Length: 294
Image (tube, rainbow, N blue to C red; front, side, top):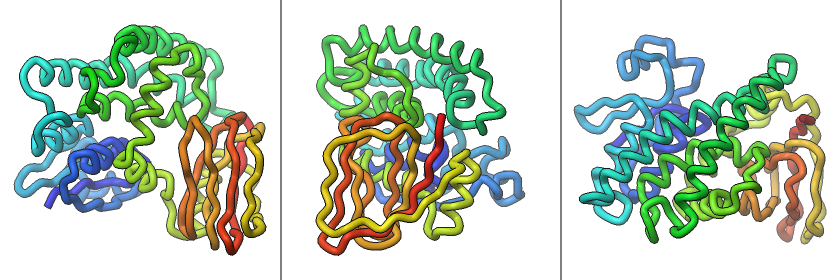
């Protein structure tokens, strides 16, 4: 069976998404970042980075190569043939060489590093470079819903995954309405939602959740009890929020980020100033929420 090795909160997310879209059986081996310099993992990926893949005797690193392998297991439309196959390779390489370096420069100085380690000038430069790439993408998507036309393909998976973190963390896509609409189509597909749940529910217990929040600069953590049958009107908060449902059912719903949360163990994430509303089930809910002010 195909094994995808690495936590979902890494580039392994795009591989999990591709496997879900392909509809093939796979095993998610949740090797954490703390284990990637140890000998067992280095035997799979000598770079000491996530992810790695095993498929029988085949071992691969590089997430986009893994995705192309996953796509090769199925036919069209996910894995196009002929000229469209060449176009899928083009956009996959563009994701790696053009889209990701610029977006990563913005992301690392906008939300990934602790505030005291961020450089506003570097973030601005990354945003400007990203805007240049998004202008190219905006023009390409002007006459088509997906990169290659009417159908979602591995090209869309490979490129959209580059922008997932920025889409979740407040990048200003509003100047590029075709790109934003495309991202929302991609990230709300059933397979994408399944993969997102693997990534966004990245902890299984409260202690680990608190440790993850602290590592990402969420300095305020609160536990709230929510009444049964609650449905708050649409509103915004001035902070990034990440939450974990301790008991009951709690959902956070927004146009930008979709329907998140759910029953006990579910997670959700919302960038600051995102319009959303919140609901609970018939028994109410108990929720742990981290807040991070930009």
